[in-house]
Image (tube, rainbow, N blue to C red):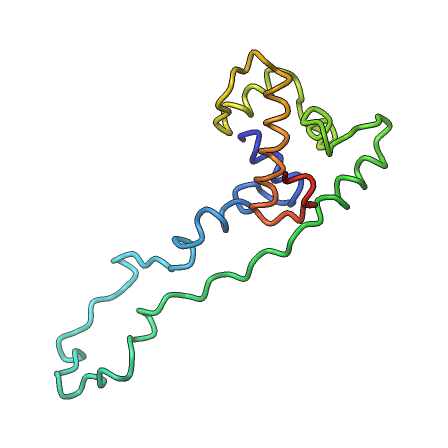
Length: 159
């Protein structure tokens, strides 16, 4: 599992793909697919003639209308969740400022190798050799992406 998906899964619960899918795949998920084998062909006797067909003002047949989009997932209070985890942790972790502490709080590998992997995954534009700059960018980017996927994040963390 990719690292960012793992972060999302730990914050939102459940499989990461289910958490991220409504945001990225909503359009394709809302239209049910039918395989040709599952839909029997109408018999010639059952095919309506133009006189028997429904008037144009009746609208499309029910099977042609798309299903209503799923309701939005409830927002997760990220601050309350992470502050709660931090209160239970024996280490003093500052998840609001440190990507390392955020990853530790979520019980993830926070090594330089893991952070470089996360940076590659999130398309970090800088030099991964400068870990201080990379860490600051990673923290901001992860917080922004959590908010974009339904996490309730304080404005001061998004700036």
